[in-house]
Length: 258
Picture: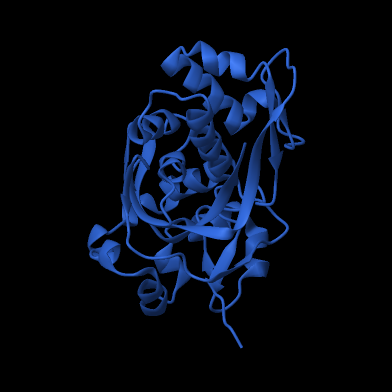
């Protein structure tokens, strides 16, 4: 019982407002299939819900644990509870943390999809995504598992975009960006400057066209300037022709073949 949890990049990410204490956005999410964590359910007699492979992350802070708790609350399914007395969750991490690649969210999304399948949970994918959205804004994208999608609202609106993942090269500096701090700085310094007319029509353009037409990573990703302020060391890793994913710290570009 194994499932891959792929990374993602944000081809573009534009903040559209701030409501109820959270930012609203519109973004093109794209899977990076060749970079993934692996989630396995391994037979094991467990006294409590057990996760292995995430050193340094307290169980209560782990997105997989949060997903398991919410699934139990939502379904009350005794088979789900019983299953994890006899299986542990083993995670093989490849996606770096605090890198703008959605590793923790992808792990939780993959866990929820696999748990739904093996425990025969009576939940639709839409219902599963609604539950996942309580953990984080990226979860619905990973639960729907589209290769590419336009994501909007608080992350709960996920509309598939008909394109295959691009061949991307990922570069992650040896630093992490605190997502909460990046959003805090954006709200304080950049929120009043947002102009929805500046990115009108972007959701209709293929991702390759967007990267070619909008070559400035600061224009494609509203969080990039805030991330540079939140994590000043990022400035030393900027490279011409590279774009910025999410709240960072990863950069990406189209992979060039000889």
